Image (cartoon, rainbow, N blue to C red; front, side):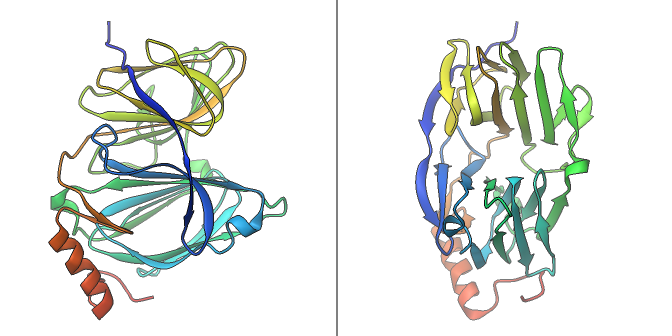
Amino acid sequence: MKSARKVSRIQLGRPTLEGAGVRLLRAFGNADPLLDPFLLLDDFHSDDPRDYLAGFPWHPHRGIETITYMLHGEVAHGDSMGNKGVIRPGEVQWMTAGSGIVHQEMPQEPPDRLLWGFQLWANLPAQQKMMDPRYREVVRRDIPEVNTREGAKIRIICGQVEGVKGPVQDIVTDPEYLDVTLIPGAEFRRSIPAGHNVFAYLIQGAARFGPDRQAAQEKHLVVFEKGEEVAVSTERESARFLLVSGRPLREPVAWRGPIVMNTEEELDLAFEEYQNGTFLKNSKRH
């Protein structure tokens, strides 16, 4: 019998103003041992263009990966490696900043005005912080879905479910990123490597988590303790949530704005290089 992970805490996201004036809900945004290697999760969800059209103009990243997942609406993007395009509903942009990248993400106003998506930051270990940047754009048709006998529909962005692998592979921290929908009255169990950290973020509906069946509703983050298995159940309504896990780095975190390193000296150097034009090591200038 696998040990079920208890719930450490359930927390509501915090309204935050980011970029050039984008209003969003920050599920978390700190270096937490129970969330390591993940640093930040933002939920941007609004049908008022004034909340998002200002977007995220050109800005740098170093030392992390940024993962953008769209549910509704579109975000146009471009970066210093020459990549550009549009992230559409059901699509993912997985960007490894590594040694440094400069990019922009600009939401577009859809006909119904609704924009909804998520951005997750994953830390890179010290040995890979200065790796060459890379960029992956995953279209909707390339993200497989699995339907289980227990009443779960699972979109597999990263990881493997019932022998089906997600399109994003070969990531340093061995993460799993699932979009899970449960019908009413469903029981869902997911094995997670014992040494990995895991969290769930409720997108819609309500569910109960862990062996104590703690209740959580949409816009709430559920952080789990150590164990081997995550248990989630629904009652009278359905639920949709992101389930994300990964191998913790257990390294010092020096974090300032869009750059995350291991020491303050490394941070100072990164910002100095950005100011003097030597920040980009393997990219074209925008």
